[in-house]
Amino acid sequence: MPNLSIPRIEYLHVQNYRALHDLKLNRITPLTVFLGPNGSGKLTIFDVFAFLSECFTVGLRKTWDRRGRFRELRTRGQEGCIIIELKYREVANSPLITYHLAINEANNRPFVAEEWLHWRRGRAGKPFRFLDFKEGEGKVISGENPDEKDERISEQLESSEFLAVSTLGQFAKHPRVSALRRFITGWYLSYLSADNTRTQPEAGAQERLSPTGDNLPNVIQYLKEDHPQRLEDILQTLSRRIPRLEKVEASIMPNGQLLLQIKAAPFANPILAKFASDGTLKMLAYLTVLYDPYPPQLVGIEEPENHLHPRLLPELAEECRAASANTQLMVTTHSPFFVDGLKPEEVWVLYRDKKGFTQAKKTSEMRGVKEFIQNGALLGELWMEDYFDVGNTSS
Image (cartoon, rainbow, N blue to C red):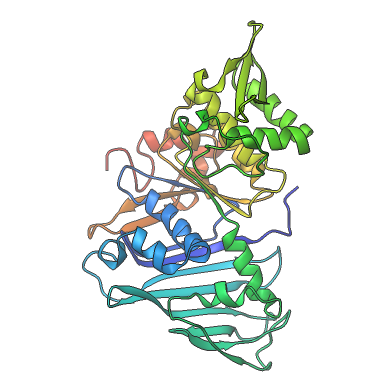
């Protein structure tokens, strides 16, 4: 059953962020997959979530500098702010909250030109802002359920580089602001590679896989010690996906390093993980993310098809959908085999318009797609056979 108590993003609007000159995504689903040819903007959408998350965790200035400032970030030939706007619900059936962030630059330094949160308390009420800041100054309504008639408290941030939600969200008197801060700082964005999972880190249980997967043995150790049944579920699923795999073990060596070993039938002795196949390690890593006992509220996975056998990909799509009951998943792909395991409402096709800007269209809104699916067709097959309105292999 879906977890009704986790936040869900339902809408994304991005302006002036690289190729995303003016991109709007409506009715975003718990599992959302971005498909398209090379250069269509898949990774740019992924980076929007990474950018916002890093702004909250390491700060706007560092996040800005890492990406080459306005010179590299702002859409070519455009002026004005970079704008990211999310609409989300904290829990199912709660009011829809809009978070708006506009970033500009002066003297090669970024600043928050505008940042606000608004919602509508009742069906008949008008939307109003309960946080409203410009260049480090603004007002906020405190309390559990901010009302338009409540007192607005003036606040001054130390710098216009600071995000109001990130700063004020640290205080218990602003629970709605705090909830958004916790949501964004808790996002998990994966950049897994098989090579990184082959490391031999220092022993010590770690609850969550790193973005690159270099602490996979530590996560296996944590699951073995604290959640053995969850680890058993992962291994059973892995053994169904990878024939003849029997066991995965994390052992502590005398020098304090953690050794990951994998045993396959019919061999009596396990092998070191560094000698296992790329596909085995990547599938194991993905399953530790998808079967996390306390999953992040948003998970991003970049191109999961790399190093995996095509027949594993529809099954991985099913695992992603099952995990989306307890988290929101954003996935980028260019694999028709992964897309074969998806539903039309879960897939956005990205493409470039005549001006070179990224546009998006949901496959469920394309002519004839639903009818093809009802008659037994698969989405990936339709894409490869040029049945999509946009983003076809020939375009």
